[in-house]
Image (cartoon, rainbow, N blue to C red; front, top):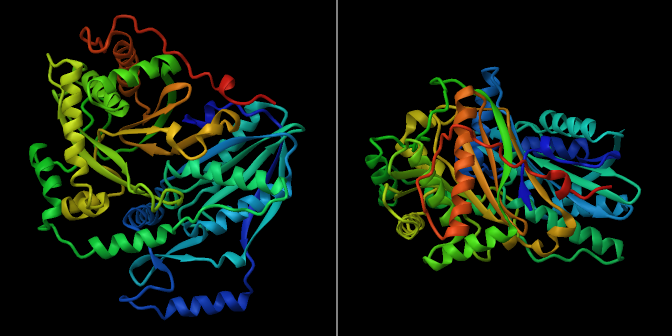
Length: 505
């Protein structure tokens, strides 16, 4: 399983069907719920449970952007393959069971008594309507349709907050689900694939749906707010953030250290691209090299990123933000939601340090970060940078690194058959974000960055240097030479072979 732009996806054409979620409650029942909500006061918004810190900020930005006639938009989507003629009623039942199982997917968000509340619908009140959409005989036209469909259909301020559909062919189907970020994160996508396909295959065999318990994300949000809503900027749990900010010259956000050609307070259209950094055999050797020096593969990738940024003119000390899963080892493993805390990490990648030394710094920096992961990012942001928190976006290009080993996800043993892919999209940005994924086919990179001439040059050179660096580590065991970020003639990057990855109809 990997992540790349939907615009790059090869989906064999066919007939498109979508399943629309609806509430079957009567008007009288709906009016009664509205009366209950209206009676809620500032102290108790239990008619609609309170959103998490991530959700509250996301919803507030959407509200403010809409009011300013400057709407922000983004989505997270997943696609996967089904072999054989699709049993449409079985898939519809599997999709409905999936929505009923995860409370956050049944929520409508609204501003209530000053709080962002999420009101979950009763599972028994939900149903799906099948709606034929169109038939396509061209992959290009189908891809254009899906891109536009997701853009038009996903709206933070409107329920439902996701769409579900499939491209049907005589002997196979491609299923798609696209979500607003407010109800899920990237690690929710493998859960979607595993649960929907496991339920579907069981139903096709005449079996009842049987899945392990999945605690509600709303319970996680309740617990988080109870623990952190009352803290203030003097709380000792913020000391790690405070020291990080102090070493960064007083800035809450660590800056992306290379030139992207952006102007202050301006948002830009984005470039969304993906490429392979290592094939399966080189990725295996890269992992073994990282383990040999006492690190993990993600640490090796982060060390490589730091060295490439430094060689391009960045500082010797790497400073960045890193999303970290809050699911824990057991409790929330099978739950859909936004279980992400974003934390600052810092380590030395100065010139002259070999691979083992830089990796030791990454390992120490990561250990220090994990030791202070308690406070939610949004809460730290609100308390320590209140002026920037009031804005609708991060203030300038921010250094951001994310890594997921998809081989460790539930259902990964069948990914070669299901061919799941994750797709992220955002309308605009003012910086760059990169996501790295390891799967059975190798190490992959997906980057979203501002569409400026400077950013295209910078990110193109950076990605090529990174590819050469991780390959050198895999083949030579470390950094053997300085990395040239601006070679006179940069070779074209190997394009991601999405047609070969996707199942052909």
